[in-house]
Length: 321
Image (cartoon, rainbow, N blue to C red):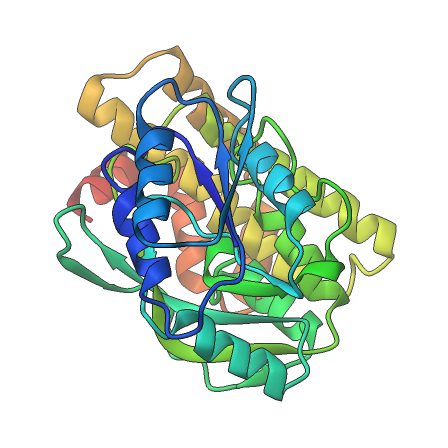
């Protein structure tokens, strides 16, 4: 298990408490000190000692980001399976046992469960993913679900066979660093096991990368470019063309515009929010909107059309949501 630690003084103890409460004992807990400059690591080590967790520490000399932290932890992972647990989240006590049973029974390459969002005060905000009817799927089928956004590509709600990762699979210095590595594993997987229960608890805070607009938000464009290169190298871009198109609009262009416009509404427009919205609008193509409509993505097509043609109306609709 790999747990990056960076400025999580208020949450790391609860995170490690949920590790200690697992009905299946973790054989290795790797705490990656990503040089946050606060007391987070001291709290993490004290909690691991108190909870008698089999922990090891990897220390970065300077902050290197989540991708680098996961790579450093993965390099020390000695078990057959690895779990990337985010240090501000927790998991249900049966997370490890249920996912291990699923991946073992299916002889799968990795297992995935659904995710429950919780507020910082513990309020239940609902389950992220819809019920998924299949229990064992070919990896490419899961890849399509990840691209369409019906399943989530973050690393934290999965356990993987460690041997599937090469060296340093997560990009360094980039936000949304887990999407492409996880998708690549799905494309290459023979089987993926799906546990249809929300066993991972994602702590939804306004300051998180996924909620806070900034320069990092534009890294979503880098993710889209990395996907294009990945599929081009594989030679199956055409097979996944519709899925890639949906991903580009649903998980890249519209989220960038939404976060930029919400930031502009809350704090006033600035150069970055204006540039982000302009960048998105410049990348919307009428032929792609028509194609989205043809493949049944009518709401997505409509949202893109309004953003491109009537940005003021789009902003007003966004404020009501």
